[in-house]
Image 1 (cartoon, rainbow, N blue to C red):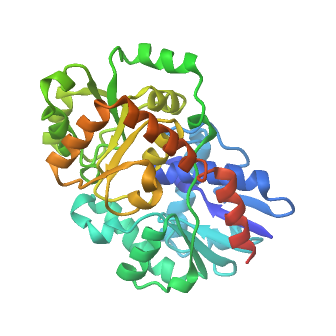
Image 2 (image 1 turned 30 degrees about the vertical axis):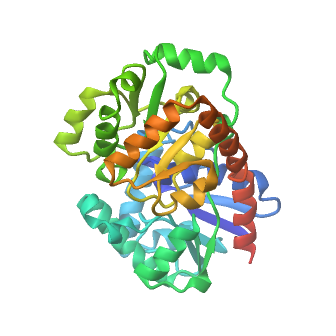
Length: 362
């Protein structure tokens, strides 16, 4: 069996989808056996993961994105030719005209472009809108959580019978970051005090303003002993949110090698997102043994289970009180860390890849 995966998101700036594709393709190739995993464009080897840059060189990136544009906006049957030997073509939101002969599959990551359109820029909404027709035409679909499947059925009108839930994975680096790497990251980013950490693109859905307000509402005795560290590119944050970042320790985009040790260095990980299809940062923090406070909505209770503190992300008081309880209780932090590590162990990329290969073979 020959599977071709649309890997064009690996060539552009992206966060969760890029993380998913990079590790997913890597582990599918390791476990494929007699099957083969190709990509569109042809990427025989993936360069280092960088969410702000392509995994391929400049020439290959430019040529590949030009090929995508030709495939999407002209009658030229580029994909039919490039995927002519494929048994299955696995699409993303960037492909508008998948090849005709291969069986069509895709991964649904979330449906926030429909449930929360006001939180997305127009370009995101256009890309997701074209994906709906593709999802209805697909032979089978993967959803990264049961929540995402349920929402796709309810909001997009997809048949539940064609959607298989396969949880995403966590990179091995998060499970046991070396102590030396943790200390190096502390020194590199000036993290001398215990800190609450948020990691993610700074955009309305991530609810950064609420987290900053809740942290600043903590009693002085707690707040003065801890920093709030925010890591991630600014994305499409409002000017007001960008201004508020100046009141916390904002470190911007973190290179991938620093992300696991930075996460492990945190005292508490706080993630009051308004909606997540899976929630990579939460799963990664659990793997790193960091106590997690996150939202009681979307997939986050499904991923965190009883290993996290769940709060109403629209309630400043709930977020504040949860921060205070966890920061003031070493016993609670230890308990959450142990439960988080145990729960995160079920979100491994080899498990995700094995289930995905089974999905393709069926």
